[in-house]
Image (cartoon, rainbow, N blue to C red; front, side, top):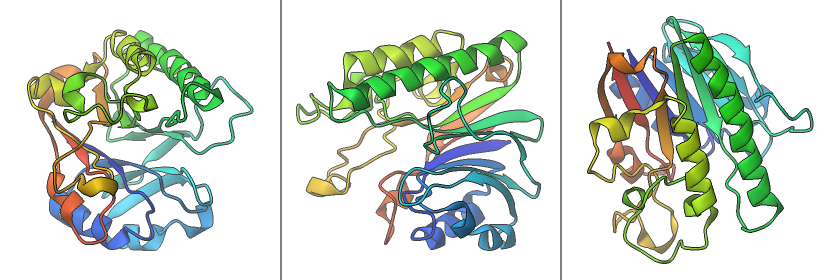
Length: 256
């Protein structure tokens, strides 16, 4: 079973790229982020014609998350992260696909920091840890997939000082990610590629794709019930070089 996460950065604008990739890579489950469309504008017909069922939560202009499933319909579990009834942003969705739970996470960016946006990021992480702890306690097979907006270690960003003040690499951001993984989650890509950067994001500015000036922001964390099934993990880098590409590339795992 192949599970992927892909920050599509506007699903309608990147729909040809997405459909091409679905046809080539044939993932069984896909977590999408940054749909940047309303619920009504989600391209359900085109995705259905490509052989995928879908559940989604859209938001006009910003955010938006979805889960796709190949040759089946994902079973929707929830469309919001618990713990803050005032949180109206479409950043979390959860569904069952082929006997496992898959999330799509679009964690707040947190810039500028310090400030209220960074505080929101850390609080969102706290809520995610509470949800994740319940999965661990119940021994459920789960993939916490998504764009975490954190490069967890210095290996996860190209050599530079230009991001030093960015929320993506702050000590508190990295500590929050580390606390989550410490519950017992397996960072699948890092597990199988301990010494490679495995970047999944290259900013559009300053020629960063051509320079391979990337960051690893897109993660697939496997619960203890699922980690022993891990066979392969990677990033489909070449998608980032396509015409009209998202600034992210899909990260994926293959499970027995």
